[in-house]
Amino acid sequence: MKVSSLLLLVLSLLIISCSSEEQPTAPDLAEESVLGKLNHGFTLNEATQEKFEEGLLLLHNFEYEDALTAFEAATALDSTEVLTHWGEAMCQYKALWRLQNTEKGRAVLSRLGDTKAERLASISDPIEKALWEMVEIMYGEGEFDERNQALVEHLAAQHAQHPQHQEIAAFYALSLVWATDTYGDGSEDLRLAASIADDILEVNPLHPGALHYKIHALDGPTSAEDAHKAADAYAKVAADAAHALHMPSHIYLALGEWDGVVNSNRVSYDASVNRMNRMDLSDGARGYHSYAWLHYGLLQQGRYQEAENLLQDMLAYVSNEPTKQARGYLLGMQSRQLAETGGLSTETELDTDVKVYDIGLAAKSVRSFLRAQLAFQDEDVNTMRDEVKWLSTQISLASDLMQGDGLAMCATGTTRYAPTENAVTSAQVVVAQIKGMIALTEGNGDRFAAHMQEAVALEEQTNFPAGPPTITRPSFEQYGEWLLEQGNYPEAITQFDKALHRMPRRSKCLMGKMIALQKLNQQEEAEQIQQELQSILAQADNELLSMR
Image 1 (cartoon, helix red, strand yellow):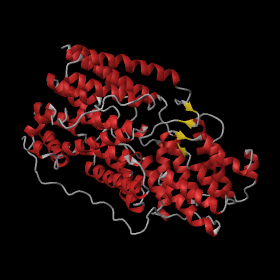
Image 2 (cartoon, one colour):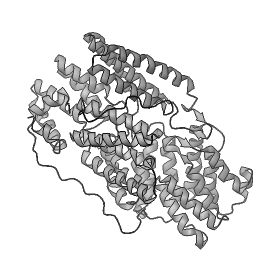
Image 3 (cartoon, helix red, strand yellow):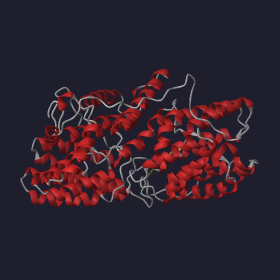
């Protein structure tokens, strides 16, 4: 397996202890299902109460498919219960991922009447009516973002009227996360969501939604520390939910706590496989989200061979069942493996022909960069130029498709693969990066620098990564490594610092910054980073540890 030249240089300078740090242990799983605890106060028909409770717990944990199954079972037991229908409708609206199934949601609503007025008139309980108004807004008229904002306003009023009702409060907090346009920076609306979650947790520390939504509200390097306790608690409170087992890693990744990222996503992925086997599901049911995060965490720890083993398995899974989700995650894993390590063993054969026509601009840009990475290694300028031309066309088409709220609509509602302003800007970064790689291959350093300055300026306009970066080799890092080679150590540090602000404790950025500091004879700060790297790379491959 090849190793990047920067990493070889750093490992020749580092004296890394080969003793592994102690890994956080996985949460103890209770013998019975553990999904959290609710104090909602709803009283349903005794026959439906248990299934409704199960569905609501699963809903708070974003286990939408299983939640829908539970709500449908409750409805089948007593179709006169309004809240079981409400639960079914809630499962068709996944706004955090900009997804909704309008057709199915409206079909559920129609069970209570042909019009909104008729449906609301049939509900006497004020809390049930308030909750039903939520789904009326979700599947009503208006743009997606407009409906999310209307949902915030509705739930704000209901929370003011019923401040002690934990479900009203929880969904109010969630609606603020859904509606924000500044996800990942701890902005005022997200701080409010976290505060509402805290109020719930004061009286019910086991409420899965409050823990879950606080993590989402503070998911970013500028705010993540304030959700650290919630992250530590959530996986233990809802240890039977694969998504809950994954969620703490949002905070751990935002803080660069790679042991936590690896551990959380390993147990989450294992839980998804257990569910897949228990329900006799196909490979498409695997928790690919957690799998990709696990892969990225291992790369940051220098555990390249283990990461490559995961990639080899992923290539087989996607070959068996190439779902949209699986294809997207495979592309990212392939490109990150190259970006972090510089190469692969001969046993791994990458798939550069992953179909991307139906999985959005982000996946298209990752595939173009993947192909360009390989072409750059082969000094194949023509292939890189082809990718620039193709991706530029895709950006133009995506820009034309964007509507007022940055979303395109499909027959069943909003699609997560619709182009957004952030996706367009991120793809423009990749185009500039590939142009820079062409310039470097042709020996034109000035042109490379100009393209990288463009890439950096564009990437600064994108959202902070809320997971493994979709710009799989951040432009700050790419430019910083080149500046390091040119001997421009102060500017290299500037670029590495930009990356570390957005992606704390990213290994290659720390490596580059350490070298630059050493070259500038700033030994004290360089030694601090060296100690940090020793901690991060304590479990790195033996092959790497021997290169010192």
